[in-house]
Amino acid sequence: MTHLNSLPQIQSAFVTGATGLLGNNLVRLLVSRGVHVKALGRSRTKAEGQFGDLPVEIVTGDMAKVGEFAAHLQGNDVVFHTAAVFHDGYKGGRAPWLCLRGNGDN
Image 1 (spheres, rainbow, N blue to C red):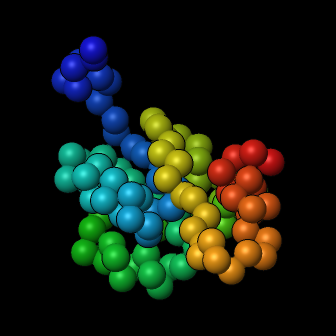
Image 2 (image 1 turned 45 degrees about the vertical axis):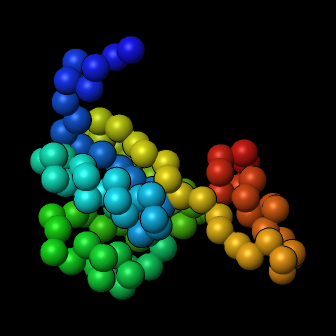
C-alpha cells in the first residue's frame, strides 16, 4: 500500500463538481494543503457563496460543454472529476442520457 507521504506533492488541481457535496469538501481539503485549486461549477454565484473566503479560482461551466472551459484544464497537476448528475429517480425524463454524458460515457 502506498503511503500518502510518498506521493508527489500536488501544486495545482482542477475539480469538477466543485459545488457538490464531494467536490466542495475536496476543494477545502486541497486549499488547506496549499494547493492552487480551479473549481468548476455551473453557477458562479453558488461557487462564490461557497468559496468566497478561500483562495480558489472559480471556473464557470457545464460538463456537457467541456469545450467552453477546456483551456482551464491545462497546467494542472491533477484533475478530480467529482461532477455527477443528481436527480430524483421518481420523476423519470431524460436523466439516464444525462448520466451517461455527465459521467464521461459520451
